[in-house]
Amino acid sequence: MRLEDVIDLPDRGLVLKISVDETNPYQITKLKNLAGSKIAVSNVDGTCFEFEVKDVSISFSIANFPLIALNIRERVDIERIEKGSNIHLI
Image (cartoon, one colour):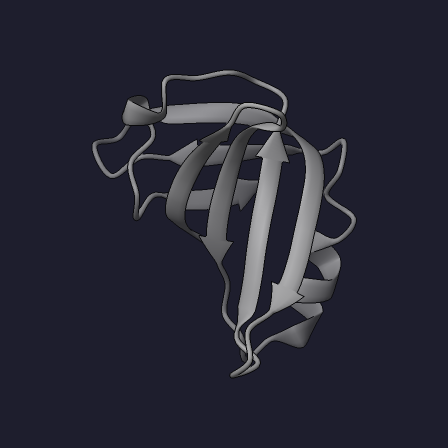
């Protein structure tokens, strides 16, 4: 999985917008069960962060492209998390 954007929503907290291999529908289905699980975000510069997933939102664009957002429990300065980072399930 790859980090596309980081959004700080006042009412929800930090949201990680991610992309996955859309040719593997099982991976998208598996993401729905991530609430309460831990993920690791590996920045391009080598730093790594560990987060707990609070909520998962999955929808599809009009072109059937998956739109996936992971709401995390931790509060982090969004400048420290780089777009393009890899996300791994722990």
